[in-house]
Image: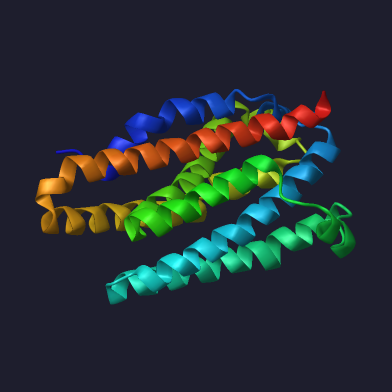
Length: 228
């Protein structure tokens, strides 16, 4: 029988491939993306990360096993470091100061996306939230690796090379795999307790993962619309 992660991948890879065809990402790889669009992306990603951390903390409070609690603590720590010690300084390099951050609001897609994940955690619980958040991490690892392979030469001279380096890095890919493995173990544990609801629960998780991938694709589209 397939693992949950294998089912999620089969359901969602086409959406990740569609994201790779978005002008925003292609122009990042080719180095032609207008910096104003990237600045906006960094701001919107910051707002997303703040909600991402809140959701992680919600999940930590819902985790039942000590091993999973420790895993969530580690993810929270790494994500907070990424947000405040890497992302914010990178925003400063782009000239994004505290005043601009305060005056700017999360766009509609980010608000809808994060509200959707909060809703899944509240209504469906820990496993649903873990599945939803994994989609973001996994899609970035997938896109980073695939686009680095496809646009390798162009990326070497792109001003956005650091973005592709970060998400195709061995450390990031390995950390993402740990999350995938943890989700599979959690799913197996839940299935063993509720065999009668196995199919229904699995389908629900696949729909959540797929919906998050749709939001991700919509976000790449909306980020580029400012150029028109």
